[in-house]
Length: 258
Image 1 (spheres, rainbow, N blue to C red):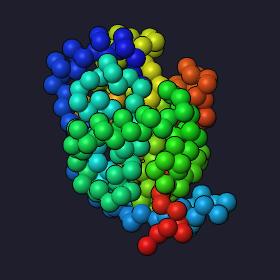
Image 2: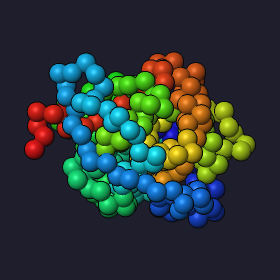
Image 3: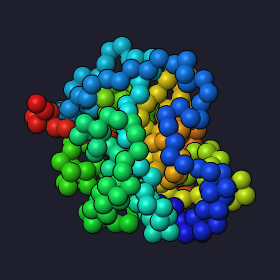
Image 4: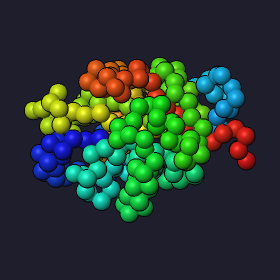
């Protein structure tokens, strides 16, 4: 959900930096030394009061889910795609849950059509975390849970093969590739409400993002503390969207698992 001012002033910067479709680990030179595992997807038992069927007892040291990526403006029309980060995040997770484990870039026209479809389902332009889960369940058929964004919860859910969708404020992520990051850090229209996908973690307290707010948002590494700052930044700047430090996780219903 990137503001008009941000993108009108920022597209030139983006072009100048040569930002293209990113790949996993592009932002972390040390990631090649990390041994990641990709757990199987575990369905959600909607009748259970617990967050999952059975959280892993021994969490892997590092997990990566090869979630395919799309920016929220796959055709490059950023001015018309200022509020489609929820859609893009849902598209990425939906394709992963349907078996697309390529970890690659989703075809731009395919992604754009999927984003347009989800836009027709949104009850508001900007959604709360709860509403993101409700849209996924009502229109896409997924079970969902909204959980506190503790390290343990995030790692458990990723270790159950479930990507996470998190609401943040863009510039709170500390990613200097965002237009206006250096000169307009807290200015309205530059630092705005946003959703992204968390696709993994490593043994350095670092999490891997699929961030649809940038063309080069695939595989951005961020510390846990920085991610929590971005959530807190959203809550302080957008009281109507304030859900606290939480994330929403989607998975098939346990009863529909094959």
